[in-house]
Structure formats: structure tokens, C-alpha cells
Amino acid sequence: MKIAVVGAGAMGSLFGGYLSQKNDVYLVDIWAEHVQAINENGLKIEEQDGQIRIFHPKATTDAKTVGVVELAVVFVKSIQTIEAMEENISLIGPDTMVLSLQNGYGNDADIRKFVDKKNIVLGTTAHGCTMKEPGFVYHAGVGQNHIGPVSSDRNAAEIVAAVLNECDLITDVSDDVMKLVWNKLFVNVGINAITALIDRTNACIADNPCANAVSKALVYEAVATANAGGANFDAATVFANVVEVARKTGLNRSSMLQDVSKKRKTEIDKINGAIVKEAEAHGVDVPANRLIVNLIHAKE
Ligand code: NAD
Image 1 (cartoon, protein in one colour):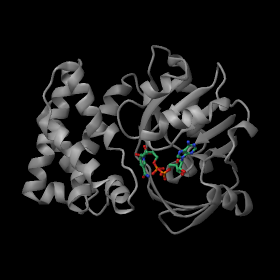
Image 2: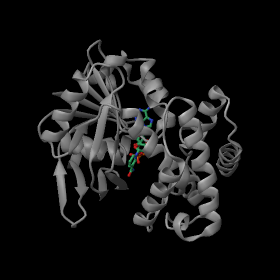
Image 3: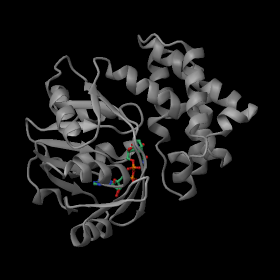
Image 4: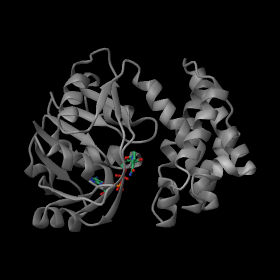
């Protein structure tokens, strides 16, 4: 299959590298040094056991040289999706399927501005990656992908799952992808901004009573927002899961903490900011989320 990865940073490189085992893959990224390193030396992926694998997808900064693809995998940060879709629209034809495994809420709505709903596949991934240097990523966490259609048509999701599974990216298709997206969002809502503000690893949400109390306020508001939109989550169960994830990933520095440390713009508007936006639409008051969005923007 002809596949383009739009935004081939840490995660885009991982997926693009793996997919290049059986597909014609183009990594499209504005980071010229990274693109050049991949084309000259191959894409290096260090696995958790220390093994370094080298893959040979093609890489480019110019999507127009690629032409229309059958599948576009969007892996820019979620705040960059609209801009990246606009800049790389030459990849998209009427039948192009588009997959997003980005964090945050609203990625489907952003992609829907450019792509027919039946061709959009949304999901979550438990893989984790960090950039080591241009052309070289570390595969920090291995896990499963859960994807699903955003319309009633499962066809694109089934095709995408088959392509991913064939390349060792274990994936299942869910009938309720929004439930998956919300559950991942709750974890990011309850961990990311707090760890970024107090400069601590994820364990603080489980171990520090004050961080835990703030997380609880954020997550309970997020659950109230989801339920106001028609979902049916139990806040206590959701928060217990957030704390459990924080405990299990206790030594991790959240992506927002990493972004703040490197003075990069964060995904706050698609995480706690998405709660504020959704809450407004449903008449739910979310003062804790409003406050933390402002604090992160102040930090930025
Ligand atoms: P990243 O910053 O490493 O990669 C994003 C890439 O997009 C960069 O290389 C950047 O140059 C590129 N880019 C920006 N604008 C572009 C444009 N207009 N056209 C083409 N390329 C452009 O980010 P990441 O860590 O790979 O995360 C990507 C998404 O995956 C985020 O939503 C993140 O929350 C999610 N995610 C990350 C992890 C992880 O472990 N890194 C895990 C799960 C989910």
C-alpha cells in the first residue's frame, strides 16, 4: 500500500518505519535534518532490549513529490493537525484513508475539514517513542493500538488494522472508538498538565496528596463533560484508572512536561482545553480545567 506519514517525529517515525517493512512508505516532515538523515542512513529505531533496527522508508519535506496516497497517518502534535493537513493536502485523494492515533480530543473534527468521514479512522496507541537525534528514535513503550471508524462504515478501519497488524503493530477494531478516545483523554487530563507545572514524573499523581487532589478535580470535571455529551462514565472508576496508570508509569516524564522543559508549545488546548470547549457546549462548569489551561499557557 502507498502510505504517507504526516509528521514523522518520534511516533510517526516508529509507525512509518514498521509499516515500511511491507508497504511503500513516505515520511513527510518539515524537519529537514531528520529527513536528510533518514534518506542518507536509513531510519534507526532502538528497541527496549537495546537492539537497533534500520528501516528504509523514503523521507521528504515536500508532499507534492509524493502524490496521492492510499493511507495517510497523521502524527503531528494535535495542535498542528489543521496546519499540517492544509500544507500536505496533495497527499489526499477522494479515497485516501486517514488514520489518527494522536493524543487529545477533536482530532477527527480537525481531519473532517479535509476528508470524508467514512475515510477517517481514529484510535489510541499504547506505544511510546522519543527522538534520540535526527533519523534515530527510541521505542520506549510497546503496546496495542485500538482503532475504529468515526462513521457507521467499518471498512476503512478494517483495512487499516490489517495493514498495521501485518507489520507487527498489533491493532484491533472497536465499535466505540470515542469511548477509547475519552479514556485516553481522561489519563492525559489527570496527569500531563500537573506534572508539567510541578516538574515531577507521573508517580506524583499517585503519591502526592495535593497533586492527587488536583488530578481528581480535573478528571471529575472531564467525566461530567463527557457524560453531558451522552457518555456514561463512572467518575470514581475513571479516576482510579488514572491513578493506576500514573503508578504504573511512575518514572515517565509526561509529554507535556517534556514539551514545557524544551520550551515547546504543548497540546494543552487538545487535552484540558478540549474539556473546557466541550463543557461550554454542554453548559457544564469546569473551573479546575479552565485554571490549569491558563497556567500552562502562562508557562508557555
Ligand atoms: P513529535 O514532536 O516527535 O513529532 C511531530 C512531528 O511533526 C515533528 O517531527 C514535526 O517536525 C512534524 N511537523 C510539525 N508540523 C508539520 C507539518 N506542517 N507538516 C509535516 N510535519 C510537521 O511528536 P510525537 O511525540 O511523535 O507525538 C505525535 C502525536 O502522538 C501527539 O499527538 C502525541 O500526543 C501522540 N503520542 C505520542 C506518544 C509518544 O510516546 N511520543 C505516545 C502516544 C501518543
